Image (tube, rainbow, N blue to C red; front, top):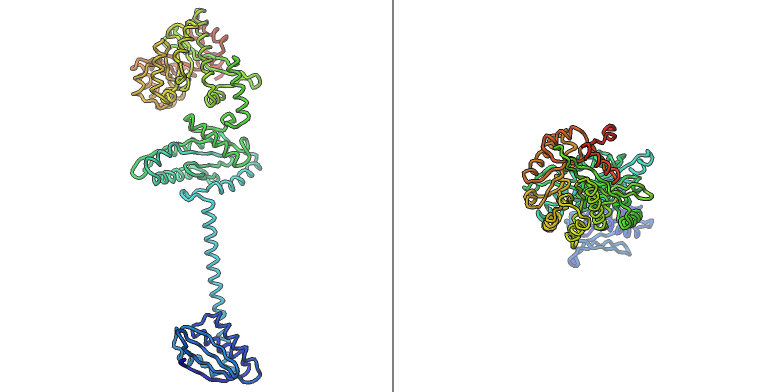
Length: 582
């Protein structure tokens, strides 16, 4: 074994302290880990706890690949291995192991203390930096846990936390707040056609537009997919509907996405706190019900109603009662006149179904028609309306009142088996004259299955029953397709008529529809006429018939029969009571 360097020296008292610091300095200079160096120095110092001068010899050897430091006393020795990283002979000289004076010891201790303080300060600094990094990571993880990765919006977890605060504050102030659930229409088509990357860009654009249109106190969250939630503080359902319409206008503005111009439409359901629920889960479920109700009926928004909810006890009870009313003649038809504007005595009435519930009183169609459509009760209900209206039409004609009668039908009704044969059977049964009975169908209903609808309506038209398109202008029918249908009449939706003297665009639309219908050989009925100004505007356009409260509100059979007799004797008698109250 090669002896690379060797130093002999004596250590005066206190030998253990001097030995500890000398050996510690030596092994650290040789590159040993600080903790291992302290252990080795303590081991050597333990041999020096006598009252005499201690003789010690330090030598460095290379018995193998590693180097070895050997410390020997009179009757003991300690050794440790290390890998050479320095010039060992230079280190041994620099350590000056033989110089063991008290002054040197104090100097060594002072240097050691400074080194320890420096290490402590460095450790504190490192600990502070580590704490800051851990806090940053904690906040980052918390943000990721509470926010949507794609849009950066709050997710359902954060929405839940914020909703608890909002509901507590609303309850304390005795105010209402509202939850909106919004679903982007036809988003799957965007993903399938343009790809998921484009879909993600659309969702980010939607999030940005929504966020820019809300107050700081409102909460916008992405629930997943194309579904968003909006929590409106101190906004009741009526306020929320206005906000929803504003958001839809903002979303409908075109924007560029990967070189294509897109626009987005959405369906929004609204639930009100505490009216529809006092916690987020209940409100989310009910706003979701309202949203799907709106989507199914091509509405922009819908406020939750228990009748929309397939699982509500109230809905199930009302459904059972409705079924009983249809089967037991518990329904009733009201009739609203449609007056010809050229002054002739040709008159039509539209049959409108009503339900006078034995406990709830008069239940209006907007409450039970959707219920009937969802449950398929709409088919027996329509057959009841058709037979009752045909029977009444025949009675009027027998009484010398040559009035025309129209009823509303649904898409499902047109798809009924043997529908044409059954309609013909009722016409023969009640001896209804030709061209005095009409079926009204909406644009959207017509376009659900245009080929089947066209075939069925053509067969019905062939038996001299007129066909009318109701609520024209609000749906998505193709004008090119309309010209091939066997139609007799278009009814302009009230939303255009009621605003035409205030909004120029509505006026242009009404005039355009009148001209187009006449060019197609169709007569035109304007719905929603409520004042003389509307009457005069429509007369100037050449509209054929008008219908609305300005003429008469819907009336039950006895009252409308009296109205008809007065009409055929004296002409139009305006609903003075209603018009004086306006």
